[in-house]
Image 1 (cartoon, rainbow, N blue to C red):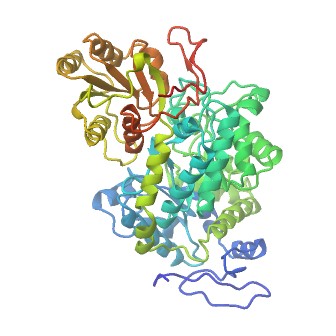
Image 2 (image 1 turned 30 degrees about the vertical axis):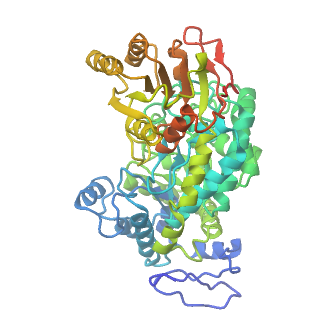
Image 3 (image 1 turned 60 degrees about the vertical axis):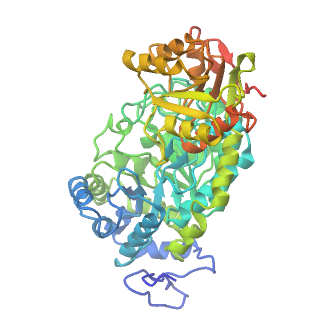
Length: 604
């Protein structure tokens, strides 16, 4: 037992009064699982001040690797953005119910540090009068969105898993990923993405989606929900009512989805229905407008017809509803930052995530209750859902984690091997003219690796060209690496063409190639050398349509190490290509025609 743990035990009518250690609340546990019945949770809520109630509804970012002693730069950032110095001060001032971790906020340096930060946050919260454990969350989707990097285990992302097509693999990835998060004190994961990516131009979802087939996506979402939640972590399907058919990124604009209600029911709803049937703990809203579901022009996050009318009443969901980040442009276009949290609560939201200015949002909710726009009973309804979830996750019984627990679970050999095996089953062979693949060391020993090197999405080693080169070397090839970037210049292209002269084959990593992209020029000039060129789409599989002359094309769906290494094992014949496209690829010159349908995937 952690020395600074505050025992949360109980006194309600009819229960023996037990004095809580420190300032923690008096609370009775139902049984040895630490779950609490609603009567006891309501008794707890009745003893909270209005300010404490308002705080419970917020999930906030905070800078720093430590709850009490962050670096000076993080103290400065906290003072500028939140008006506090540390996570402990944030909790003391606002009594927030949740904290979200980000790599850029320096919350996730390494597993032991994350565990220590989590414990520090819990200790600070439980030291408060009527202190409650904090629900710590993060976006660990795997693939291109992951906040906790190596040495934690990183799995293929959603579209890769969709290409693998195995619900068992999806569930395993969720279970192992969830167990590692829990060991570090993170109990709510904003995953899996339940959006159906039917728009190749979608700038924000893309490979974060399991695919374009609503039923296939629904099966994968349900499997991941069960995986995460079997590990004692709350899964969060997002972004309701469905962000898959947008051409605008809701971080920077306000997308409009023009689906009819019938199209929504057929395309967007099935994965959310499946998540609810699988017992999902939380659902995240989308900052999108869907006129067919709510003609008011409000974003779904602020829409009572969508969140209460459809999600709660029609779909029968009674779990926690969390907003997407309130700092995103999509939710701030129509209303000011003081109105957004109030309108979200009126729409049916329970958790208000990451407002740009916490003081503005927190005071707005407080004043809305004092002024009669929101009732205290409305707040109590959401707080009860949040406390039910904290109790279900075992936070009330024991919110702490141990370094030994981290060492036993996070990034262990069996987990890393499972990630490698799953990744191998996702790599998709799209083109293999003349049987160029698999490459043989006897005939194609010297390989030039060029291509895009986007920043590592998840604290993996990167950059992609280096990872690909190292993986080839490990398999007995002689690899030369030349990073050419996402927009290679004429000089860079000339350098790559010169480097290709003396090699047996060229491997090009492509990244979101468009008709105007100079990546096309690079590939075409490399093809003109007469050297065999193998291309690997390291993000969207749609790249293949822009490069029709490439004789061998693979899709990895992400540029994380686990997916890149697996792709190299496939192209070298150490593993069979087993993946199949989970989205259709349209022709570049005729977007209404399909070049490669869902299910396309070649074998050796």
